[in-house]
Image (cartoon, rainbow, N blue to C red):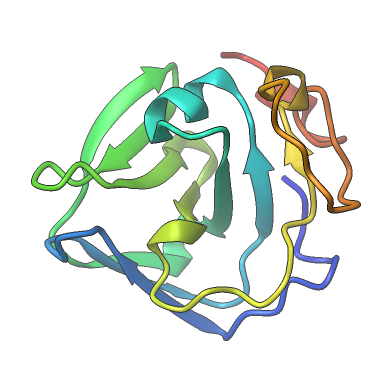
Length: 149
């Protein structure tokens, strides 16, 4: 995915949780990518027009209380949510050693913009964005091999 070049400034440790607090996580190191995804799958998972991914290598993110319930939404993709409150928590590709949590689940808000918009061909036509981040029809350049949904 897109790297953290682009000004995403975060502490070297992040924490977050679901709405009820039954599932909590801790990420160490700077995220590998931060991207808004507008695909129909993310829209359905979140109930909103897009999700903001904060991506880590799997070894850099740990569940510190409870674990999310997993749903295999497509081959090699696991989407995680809290089985008690329903909060959207994660998107993982275990075979690639990657996991993303969502910006809305972080305990502290990040202070800069994501580096781009993926699956912008799925964006709702009424959505008007004022940022200047790149808008990709599908995956960010260099990640086309991920197009196996």
